[in-house]
Structures are given as C-alpha cells and as structure tokens.
Image (cartoon, rainbow over all chains, first blue to last red):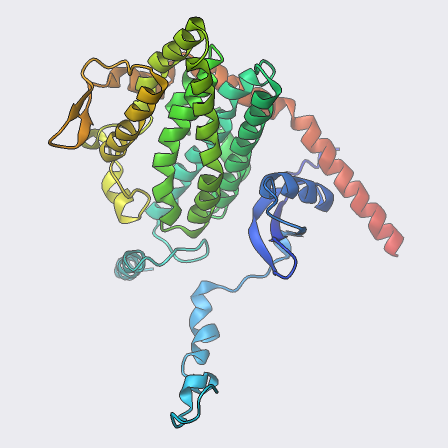
Length: 96
Length: 318
C-alpha cells in the first residue's frame, strides 16, 4: 500500500471551566479524531487548563477572507442606532 | 500587482504594526515578513525540540523521584512549546514536514546552546537556571510581537517557563548546600555554561544583521546587547546567593552605569558552534533524524488504521 499520507491538522478548542465557552487553543497533527483528542490533552491541558475539549479537522473550517472584510463588516459600522447611546433620554431617567 | 500597489500595501501594513494592531495569518503581508517569521519561528520551535535532548539525557538518572518528575515535566513542556510554535509557523504556509526537513539537513538553525554536552547532574541545575533564564529574557518581549499566532504561543510558553528556571535554581541551591564535592560540581557546571549562556542572547548589536527590521516588526523589542546586560545584572546576585563565582575576572559592578561590566566574549567559539562545529552538533541532529526516520512506520500505521476505521464507519452507515 503506497498511499502515504501525512497526519492531517486539527484545530483544538478547550472549555476552561463550566460556564465558559470553548475557546480556540491552537492546532496539532494527528491521524484521527481520537488521537487528536489524546494529543490535545497532552499539548494543551498539562496544567488543568480545561474540562472539555473539541477537536475539528482544520479542512472542515470555512474561514472568511480578510480581503472581503469591507463588504462583510462595514455595513455594521453606520448602524449606530443598534447601540443604546444613540437614544436621547432626559437625565431624570436614571438607569435605562 | 504593480510595484506601486505593493508599496502602498506595505505602507498600510507598517502603519498597522505601528498602531500595535496584530497581523493574522490570512492578512496580506510583505513576502519578507512571511519569510522572516517562518525563519525565526521555526528556529524557535527547533530549539525547543532539540532542547529536550540535553535534559532527556538525565531523566533516568535523576537523584530522587522529586527531581525526576520535575525534569520529566520540564522536558514534556519543551515538547509542548515546540508543538505550539510549529503549528503557529504552519499558519504562514510552510508544512511541518518541510520544517523538519530544514532542521535535519542543517538548513535551519536552532539555539547554539544545545550543542554543548550535559555531563553531570549539576548541568541540569545550570541549564534550568541560566539557559531557561536567558530564554525567558528573550521570550517575554515576544508576547507582544506583531504576528498574532506567535504572540499567543509565546504567552503560553512564558507562563509555563518560569517553573523551569526555579527548578534549576533549586537544584543548584541543594548542591551548593551539600558536600564540598557537590558544591565543586555546581561551580564546574557554572564555569562551563556561563559563557555559552551569554552567547545565547545573540551576536553583538554591531554584528547582528536582522535587528533593525525585526525591531520595526516587533519581533525584537530590545537589542541583543541590552538583553545580555539585563541577563548578567539579574544573574550575578543569584550566583552570590549560591556562593558560586562567575568565571569572568573582568566582571565588576559599575556604580555609574548601575550595571555590571563584563569581559570579552569569545565570538569565534560562538560562530564555530553555529556553523556546526560545537561538541554535540552532529549528535543532536542524528538523534532528531533517527527519531523521525525510526518513527516513520508508526506514523504510517496510525494513518492506515485511521483510514480503515473511516471506511468501516462509512460501510456501516450505508
């Protein structure tokens, strides 16, 4: 069998404690998901950094292209009415 | 892209860094920025990996269980640091295999300090105290470097590194409070590691070719000579506490500069070691190549197992 392949890349997400979201910690190479999980334990949680791990093969992530940041994100910039400070209220109205 | 467009992009890019904005892997970047980062980050990763060898040498012979678990944990950390850095470097478009290839063929360098042998147990103390001490001085400023993945990896590395230096210093303390033979062993180790540790902070500013550009990109926040002076000033009082003497007859407190003056560094030795003629260069690379080649069948078997498993799952799903 000569279909030699290098170990694929996996992205590692760790929940540091219950109540918090999983956060991207980094990446590593592994033959399969199970090995990625074991390696992630050793590489990213040697000091109790986590209570839960997600591993996702990197090729399954679709990322936005920074060249398109303008059309993607700029439309939100002029929508100031989405923020509470846009609305004028008299000072007498406290805490709203 | 026209030359003018490139220049305008470069200008915007420099301004972003100037404003302390981070650069992320998919952002446009000058080719030189990419290449310089691949070079520095991969060499940093290689240093962590090769750095496991001089200490791995002593794991089975550590004098107590306490020392053994600490050394084992430290060497495991170095492996972890190498892996954080390799995967951060991969975001720049170089593969892990290419980086290994560069290390194994001598195209990529690693820190020259690891080309010295660790001949006694006191070397474990000195390596932790001096080599990790110098590494920390080098690495702390990199936590705020401009390339996001590098900065994030360095934050994690620095957090973990401080135990390394403390465990080394504790080994030295114990030896220095021990028998006269143990104290001699500690002094002997300091004598051998002092100068290579100073060299580890890089050539003098006058000889350093990459400094100016690296400062601009925040790959460097202080010059090699400044870092070296900082290292000496912080380390001399630590040697005093141990009751050991620094092997430099010209070392003297300079009241006016509020810093230590120190003797001439043997840069010939440094360049010899960098060029591959240090006492352990050949052995270090041989160990890495053996590990890579000897592990090939394991990597292939794991891959074959993974694809068979995958096939089985797909069949079951039908």
